[in-house]
Image: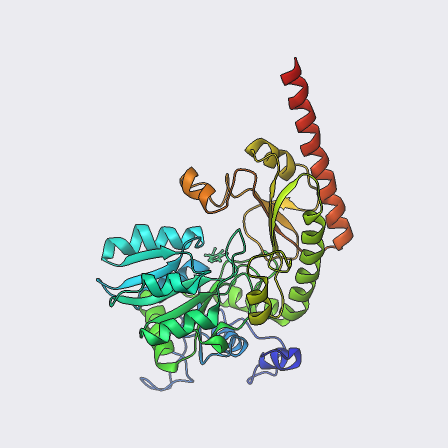
Length: 393
Ligand SMILES: *Cc1c(COP(=O)(O)O)cnc(C)c1O
């Protein structure tokens, strides 16, 4: 669904009261006329009208049949993994979200599920990693934090040919930019904590399936395992989605301006942003998405943690925090924050060098954001001249 009118009006008004906003049904249970005779809801883990409204909206947004809402992005990922059984195998993108890596490796491998990590930016690597036991292919595009792009259509074809599911973590792009189910994927997951919620005020996860039978299986897992999203947080995600298209447009144009500024800065070594024509997979990004998103990463010529710390502690508008996708700009230093638990050599070889800084470009004025970054670069330059002076002594 690309049309903002359609999106806004897919959010229902309340059939009982006419309430324009989706009401928060803060209840655990629903009164029954006689056993089993009810108005469509019996117990709020199994179903809640506020959550149901969100599930319907996200299914439409992602062009799927079934939406399922969870208490976090990781709970959504966990529900998809529960489709598998001992002996099954997964082929996953090598620079996968750290929390997904932890769940796959430290929880699911214990239950006999094997994960093969590979560089999915080249679809032939996916083909080569598949075995007769492969049931699921897991990609993120763009990835975190180096914004690598994988070809969803090409990988979907490989999945189809080997009768396995392709699941795309669409958190970074959001359905405003990219709809993986229309490109052949079977499942989409979101950390709705990020762009869908959009205001850094909740934790939530969503799954959407193309196929109704698969959707019913995940709905069964949602009820059986119980990691549901609360009515209040469902309301907040719906409210975030109402302005998704507008926000994402501004995130994209601000991020493009920031990336272009960084690309010309003398203290910067590499800039990672799919919207730059210098990005390795710029063309694939341009063909499968309507925009390049709000995340920009870069490394410093002075590739040290000290230089990165000087940078991230000298911004005013970019706040130092984990997470992304909100109204306010954030920045983080993955080597000491999101990617701290990854062994140093593995982290560096994935491109997450000691000075890499990730920006979540928010909705402030682009010129103000660029001035904020200029100020932080001055702190890096000052640090460098101080080091030169001490080494001269
Ligand atoms: C944040 C994030 C997750 C995990 O979501 P939570 O809501 O924090 O549980 C998964 N995938 C990606 C790409 C993320 O950025």
